Length: 162
Image (cartoon, rainbow, N blue to C red; front, side):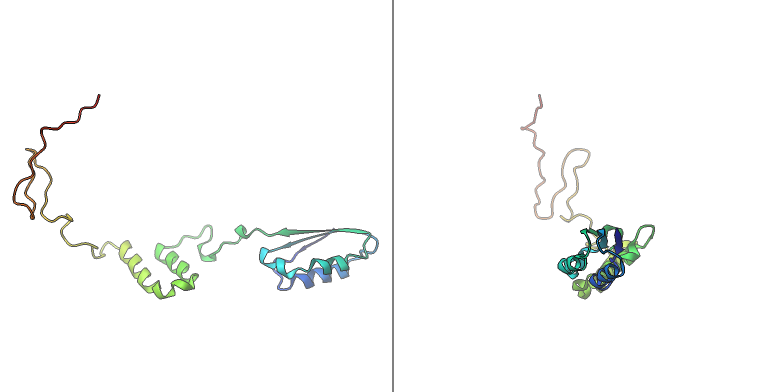
């Protein structure tokens, strides 16, 4: 059995052929097990490996893919690292070049949302309708600025649940 990890090699095919040439495989039963990344699959010429293994009595080739989940996509955001939200956003934006023209605006908006001194997004009036107030203790509504007549409380229709 020949085991190789070529996942970190620039030329995995050359490394595999070099290992096969160095091994004594004449008339042997050979099992070639090698680990590689998914993006390296196109670099492996299986027919060249079979030609190199032709001198063996019998052989089998077993490629194994290295899991990409083991490597964090953003190392600075890896397990066990704590990072401020603005720094995490900056790291995300650094790794997405299509967002580079929005980076400064997004970081400023994020900083404004995280600070207590941020300017409010709306006017100083909390009610979106202006001077409309809720019903008082008597059940009557205050007048709306667009209508001088008070809004009557509906008394004729009641909903009864059975």
